[in-house]
Image 1: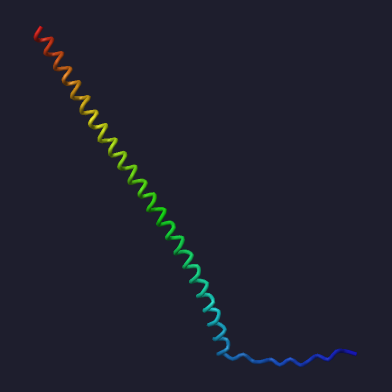
Image 2 (image 1 turned 90 degrees about the vertical axis):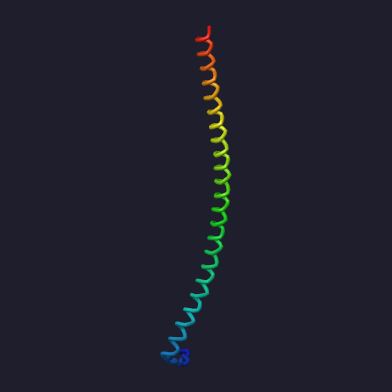
Length: 97
């Protein structure tokens, strides 16, 4: 004895049904994209904050370097002045004695 199979009814899909199915898929894709865009915005914000931090650090280093260059320049000027003064003193001593 074989079990009787129930007859299955097929419901034909119309063009409008296919359109509605496609629109639902598009809506789900848009939701996914919005989530991805939100994540990317967060990542971009983090990178922007890191760049700001690096820029601040570099500005601090540039200020230190500028101060060192000024100090070195002043030191060089003092050294040059001292050497000239010593040379003039030696020349004065040689020509006056």
